[in-house]
Length: 258
Image (cartoon, rainbow, N blue to C red; front, side, top):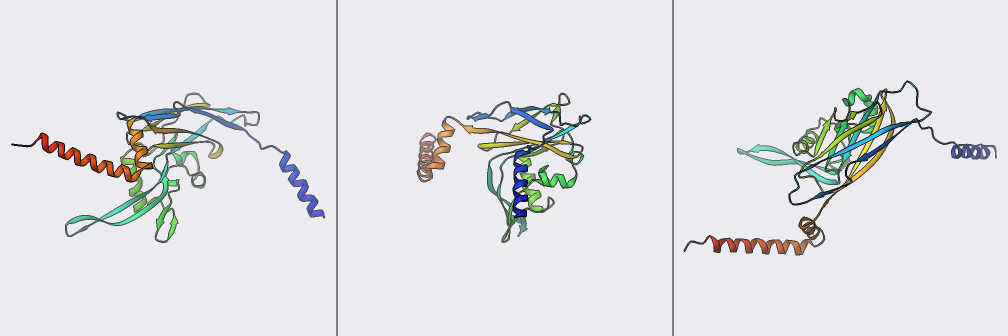
């Protein structure tokens, strides 16, 4: 009976005591809906926000650090390793990456190592090296060390296409509490919803976090083609083959030599 009474009292106390809050983040993005048209060549969004303090904020706290992580639609991707066989480079080994971000960008106002200690970096997944990239390794599903050849090659290839990036001086504090950063979107950016996670640190400790998002959508004829390919794959394939045959036939008529 005594233990039941103590548990009831603890539950009541936990339910009535509100969590302490010293700071909170207020953010917005310049465009929550990016449209992709036939002449789309990339775009740059602006993320801006402020740190809102309250009476629980330590008076001496002023030097904040921010890490902004932008992740695009998740998908399965494969990375291959090539070897030279009989004078020819061929794919011999592969590693499948499962439901990883198709776009991943990390922006901060300082190098990640200067913002938080290693254990905090890992716990908060700060920086591309600490973001979880689940892989199929034999019969197991796990992430591996950042120096793993397949993981390194995967990240390098995504960076070459502008789809993975990490910039340690991309967040600018306009005032001690007002900040901004830009989010570059390359021409081949995937369609879908992009999540933005903003994390605030002070003196190496995690202080606050907030999230927002934006969408990238196709419009016009490209949207029609994308919907047809996704919702009516068989018909889309047949029509594509017929159009290719007709184009070849028309070209043979135009350029025929009598």
